[in-house]
Image (cartoon, rainbow, N blue to C red; front, top):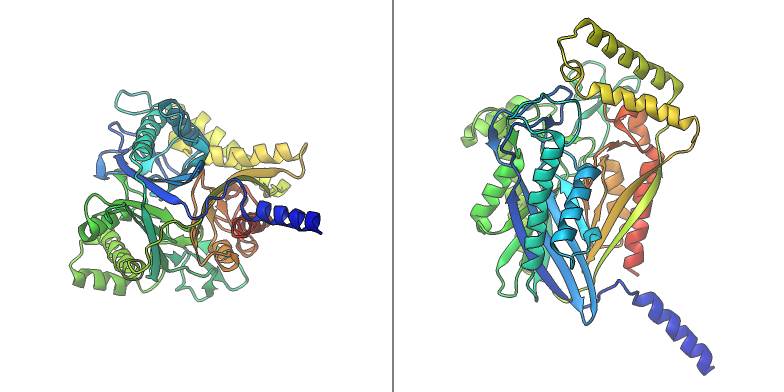
Length: 492
């Protein structure tokens, strides 16, 4: 009987206290912020045509929050970095990790989580051939510059960690992001369609208007950082040729005015692959409201209005959070590579892409004075990747897309990442099945391909066509289920 009791006790102990789980631990917090605005002209990411930057509207930054929980000899860490760029290719993440490892060997680089705010007026890190000019930075130069700045900020935040920190969280709601996929009679969908057409039927997806906020303060009760989680990309100013942090610039200014200039603001984009900050209807009434508030005309006024709404929501969340500061709570960070079914390229899709490539080649031959970038900056790579994927499928008919997922437990709060522009329905599924009291999703923690639902693929249009996607809708189902499984495991 005694042996059986001890065996059961051993099993329970093993299940409840895995080696990576830090329970009731001391939380250490460090922060840093850095300007990552290039000095030279750079190609801008986010549109089809090549745009070389000509000046700066609003500088772009990277903002770092380093967390470590310590209990005796047991430690667990997560380093969140909000980067004001469009997407974060693996080549940039690898460069950041390599530089951090060289600068400080005490940092486990697998704990570094980069996420993009998705501004369309920040440097591209790959693409078409660039003009060879002294005033234009090429891709290796851009990657080296941005990765060095980010790595320095990570090391600074890590080395600045202070013990006995506390955190608090809250949320409220504000209309920031709106469905951008209109569905028409017959079932076809269009991104940025016209809901005023007679055959308009409905908007394809739900909208998540939650604004989440996580506050951190040091042992002296001084606020040092705020994570702000918004289900909307920062792409108000999409087509400009000047570098621009978009609406997060005005959010930072507004929150600094309320909470202090030295508080680091980490902007995060929740699942919002089918969401936009642009109103799809009643645009005139919104313009009227901004004008009456005294905001600047045009896109700047739109960004100022978004910052006003986010500030109100964060302030409301603060009223709740400030009554529930937490310390010595469970902290755990898990990291996994998930394998998702890829979207299969059909022969018809391949032939269509091949026809586009042939047209580009013909135009190049007819215009020898033009560069490939002038004819098809993104289009050539776009259609070429479709053809390449089709050819690869001939030897591997069931390809898998490998993608990293981070999940972090911080007391009763969950934070989980994905690399995609993840459609909203997937994000809602994670939230509704998570064991946490509150779950925040951080998308664009990587290269940022769209991951649409089955319904969206059936409707078609950009963001739900094969060139926009790597993983299939079935891959999206697997992603959200594996994310929730990871959360359930650390909540046991």
